Length: 435
Image (cartoon, rainbow, N blue to C red):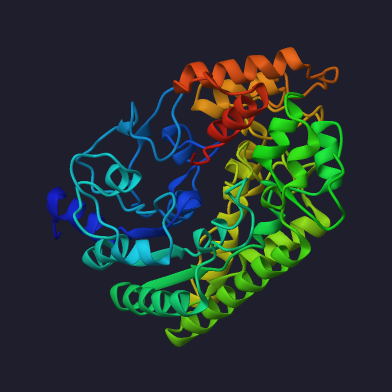
């Protein structure tokens, strides 16, 4: 009888393990509620896909703190700084960054935190790893720059079509050459994510629509400042604080242009595209029904975490199943989708889902600045999210408590500022906006 040494069997088994690499942005990194840590990274869509494949996908797990925010390295550090991660996605990365931005020492940026101890860019690292499968979801930050700056909403921050075309062409060519299989994803309509509010959504969240005209949208930062009761509706008279219909149409058209480029470049390398745009459009129109709950794109609607931009755990699970379906259909793979039991477990343990419909979620207590101060806003801190509580009546005292908590935790000064300025500054800081 032929006897094969155990060591050779182990080597053979290791050689069969597939390697999955993820290239991307903040959602791919695992940001939720304006911070990222091991508490959120373990549920990221790329990890779920790799797990369903039984593939290797080591994560650059981060330890954060109660006042942590993404982009800050103060008090945030890697659990294992020597680990060569396969999830390379970085918050804030655009199509140029994934090609060119490299880590440096000392570690003082999100790029340094995620990519170290590598020395190259996301695409360069992916090339060096020669993975069996690369997941690539990039391009959102080439549009988000026109959505996130709450007091500079003029649609001027969009990446040009020509730049996007040049950079995405290079990304597609290089990743397809380096990987046995590659899959891309397109971009949702970012003007309809939970970070933007129309008049009806503003009235539901802040108690009034403050005269926001039909067809206009404002930001979650502004809506939160209005919710505190410390800011009056006059801020919406400034055109920089709202997106008008023309600006919204400009952003939407640019996203459509980007999606056409993604489709064309993916087709040129015979790679599939996960239609995130269609998925989120369908959720916008019909909701996503799961085990008796209807998830929506709205703030606290279940798809987006408390920052209004990044998916919840169940949002990642839904996205992961879209990736799996596309991989199976295009490459004739047989990756099992997340089962109903898995989805149920993710859904009902997700701390960012308002399961009882009372307007508050459980949240992740002290997992980053926003999670720490959100209970003062009455949007989290529901310790029994299966039984509806009485409505949370936000008062100015609650609003002032929220402002003081943010100022105290972030070291913001109140000297020389009006209460309205302080409330706007605190809202900006809590939701991870750059000041």
